[in-house]
Image 1 (cartoon, protein in one colour):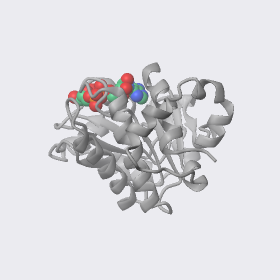
Image 2: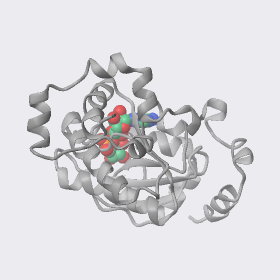
Image 3: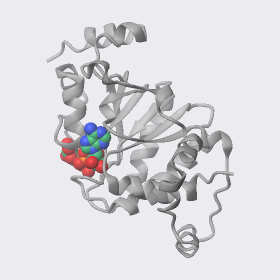
Image 4: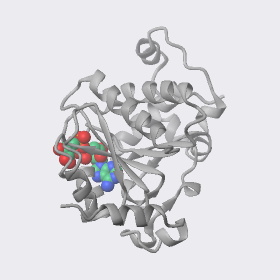
Length: 243
Ligand code: APR
């Protein structure tokens, strides 16, 4: 079942210009320069973000004493992007996979379709992935050079969801991956409540960025559903407050 190694080596050795001739999405790819960082996004979408704001009481209850201060450097390292993760030209996109790593529906299906058969052939060699863990492969036909596969929990299990994001970001660090895009892991087929998920995701991403701020240039939250857009608009100002 091999036959992915040569393709992986060939694609990863190409310049960006040459790789762009091979993206299965064709010219529809989105470059990082076209994904505004959080401060610029807020300036452009202030009304939309502000109208989702949580009440002061809700924030006080949620934070229960934790304080998140404005951090201009961190704020420039995160983005929200609404659209198809398979179009993002980043070092790695994150796949919300299942334990087999052999594909499925949702974002898993979209990533495998966009990457092509070599992704499946490499995944077969990985021997699956535990829930909460992460494994890396090439990106093949994707604009992303790599895919970091993680398996989220079925239902609301915060420790396992936190582990997904922590393990993905540690895998990125171990592989010198500096730009990364996450889908909303576990909130689709696996049924993690959307709002509860964001209240796990944003603190753990902030903690990891604070601990490894020189290792990342951008972490993109790739949103696909309106419900998630409103929720990220509500909680980004809480965990990544702007000055
Ligand atoms: N780009 C970005 N996000 C997407 C895309 C896409 N092309 N397609 C779907 N999504 C979003 C969904 O709308 C949801 O918000 O990804 C989020 C995660 O949903 P799922 O893909 O259903 O993932 P998850 O809930 O983690 O369930 C994983 O589903 O597809 C199977 O094989 C997968 O068994 C695994 C399970």
